[in-house]
Length: 256
Length: 292
Image (cartoon, rainbow over all chains, first blue to last red; front, side):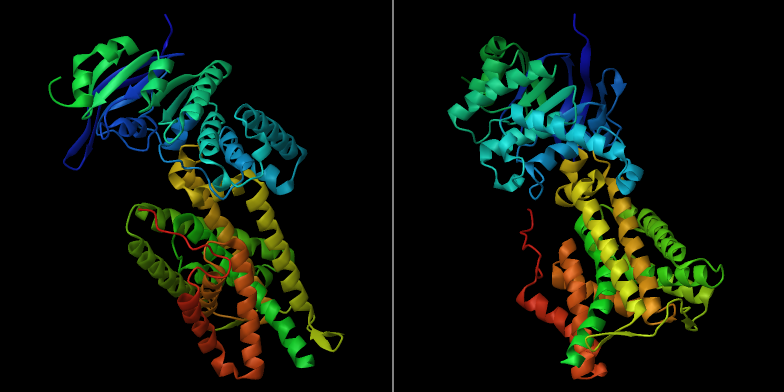
């Protein structure tokens, strides 16, 4: 039985009078690939924001490898091993493709200001290692030849891939993908599906993904959680979820 | 022609001081969207640290310069920590007013501690000019220019090549995303204040060598002019602040020579109004749409 990687206990998020997520509890096992789906406004991105520390949950807590992380700052949570991409792409637009990835690599180690100021050999050695790692990652994502391009000049599909590459550079245990296939055509979605499978094995990742493209979700995910108005209404294999009456109601509305 | 060249040399020397101050404005604005009106006072403190290091402690020039950068840097970090950080999620007008308050506080503390009487900055370099093609260049001007250029090259290297520089650029572009890439944004903001304040401190010493009269209110006018320079170059843009500073210095020195020194400040600030009307983003700035 694989170990528990992430555990959310009774997460609740209130925004003023609006409760976006209600008493949500779930676990993710090491190595799992889990989908988080639900109609628009169901609270999926809010869940991501709580897991990564962008929002402090109104109630409840998040544990990563049995360590409480929900009280930590976002950058510390990232260093502990949760990385994410964004629904609306948020790359560092004016930095080069290479620098976008390098920045994320940098977060793993402390800033050696002394080395940088005095340009010690260690500085160059570290920079070289980071460069090599970054280039390898860009190679996997088919972006190696774009390394000097500014991020904002990439095509849409390339930006989406760069976001994933940047998240991977933080060396995560758990990767959160927020609608990675949004805006992609069927062929790009197909390629993305293969890419996710590939990086999952190569980097020994556990993945939680939000996605509206059901073909991708059904094909890729071993387990699917369904959120509706902030409440977890289903949690099971793709086949179970597909047959679940409450899920069908949530998506199609009313009685079916 | 001789006069023109002469004024250009004077203008560039003065302009490089404005540029050093303007860099602090622009870097802080770039990273937390705050016009730090206490920045001129940091420059004043730098001048006084340099003064005391040279006179009371009799330290060599380069050591004094270093001290006049380190102490303002620490002060800048402290101000950010106690005055601005608690207001991180407040409306920007609140932080702006706080900055004005900090500025007044520092001016008055300086008057209390250093007395309001002007002090004469020690003359460590010979003022005998040497002639190059009919243009008189003084040794202090050379020192000012060389130091400023070195500092700016160093800054550029740091921002472009080092990882803390890249982290600074990342934070200025998207603070939330930077946090989620594992960047400790509070630390980067502290670091930005440290660098900006160190440059202002250096500018304080530079001005002491060219115009050797320092007093607690000396920061106001150069602070405002450096702010104009930063806006002129495009606030948030580092090369813009350098360019804006030099243009500001040149304008002042040409106006003084060809029109009248009484018009100097009026023209400097008219420049601000004109830029804001014609090209609000500044020469090297990008017009950005506010995110909704």
